[in-house]
Image (tube, rainbow, N blue to C red):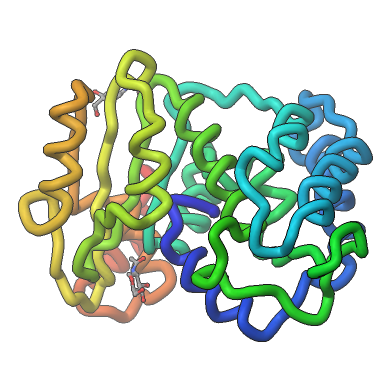
Length: 277
Ligand SMILES: *[C@@H]1O[C@H](CO)[C@@H](O)[C@H](O)[C@H]1NC(C)=O
Ligand SMILES: *[C@@H]1O[C@H](CO)[C@@H](O)[C@H](O)[C@H]1NC(C)=O
């Protein structure tokens, strides 16, 4: 989400043109909520029925293109969540890698590991043109045509909360195989970065990861990452940046072991020397 997530914007644009609200939305959202509070994070206490009610009210009481962040305030009030320090993982344009990374390096939390992120991941929703007629399951507006798209507004607020609660070290995973790896228009660049609090965050640890086969376009010393570093400096953050993180490289090699650049790893993997994974 999510997250830092220009990807989400593009995804939404593709899907939104054709599709309406995800079928069985209520069952999926409340089911995921019960899953979360029962199995995923049983230490948290939430009222899943109330969360659904507040969500539904926010969406169906408004025109489909005009659900603002403000309209979700009661839903967010029903889902407060304190997040652990030193563990938050932000990302932009590295969707495929990020979830295997957080699955392997289990200490990380992405937005999709929070209750709200977990409940609404990959779903689409909007109300009907006539208010209070429920969700529109036949079609939803595209993101770009709306002032306040109901899906965008929810992710914007969720991202804002996620970033604002960050403490200790945070990690940012950016894609070195594209131009503008750091993009001011992405969810990370437009929402999350501005909501990080330099008094609560010790270090912003940036990891730039390119595809194994390239192209190698941006790095800690090339391109838009420098702009990110400048912003961090100006706002008084301490930061580090690496573009050769071994764990990330091994993770990419596991998905693609025959690549030339993986040969040295597969050799040591065979000898059982990759214990640091
Ligand atoms: C970088 O972005 C490209 C284009 O969106 C994508 O195909 C690739 O998987 C991404 N690379 C990584 C390491 O996430
Ligand atoms: C925070 O990041 C800094 C810089 O990378 C590192 O030296 C330190 O050990 C990290 N602290 C924690 C608690 O992870």
